[in-house]
Length: 203
Image 1: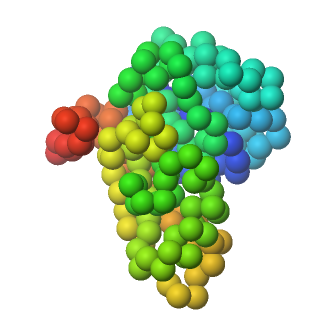
Image 2: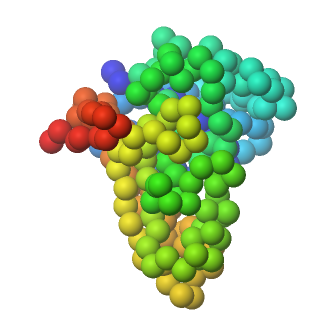
């Protein structure tokens, strides 16, 4: 059985899309654990409702050892780590131990509107300010460069003149909830190959 750990920092709607995909058998996998970046986030409640083990690894408590703590929890227990709205940056040994086995969902079309300090509504605010006509979301591998890993899947959405950050975020979230489970499914089936920093999906 393909096992995954999901890391979250907020309400956990992306997490819910993964839970639903597993429970409907769209993905043949088990969510082994959900790791939250702080106590009290709704993502942890979602996990508990579905009898998934939960852990909290907060920067406040673990500081620069946070990534090492996450590695300790996941090593030998999961095949894939999924960052679903996880706002802490992973660094150190975990990136080597899980090379090619950590993915993230980002709320823009990478390489636009990404990198350090580009998260949540800040991304959508920057998109609207720039005047671009399309934004979207990206599932990518995680490496030592923030939002710099190979792109697995992307989905574009139109940006309307009337949009604010919240309405754009809502439209993009709908697509996130489709492509994140899809990426996990492809990875669990061994259909994702990386060559020279680019991803080829084998159907």
